[in-house]
Length: 138
Image (cartoon, rainbow, N blue to C red; front, side, top):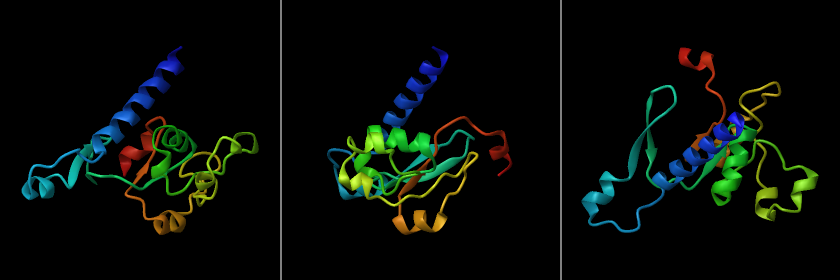
């Protein structure tokens, strides 16, 4: 039950992040447009990060992020951490099946291909999972 609540909280947080980063329906004037081109986001380590207001290209840093992105914003994916399994491929669009594979940044099989991520030109790279203690050092 505790794990379910954690996953639900992550899903809600992820959904709110994309809702908050989506393009406003109407802009009042050009001055407002310029002011709202970016937004400040505070990450889990308390760092303030400036992001584009309208995020359209997203890369996952690993499989948990890939799952959430596939659920909430599949059209914004510019690549995948790993290819979809044969049993799930029948449910995946051809566009998603043909995305480049980046690998994962963390874990036992960490093999992130940074050049592939850079070539995909994402607006942001999303990481999901538990906060790692060693990240506070960076």
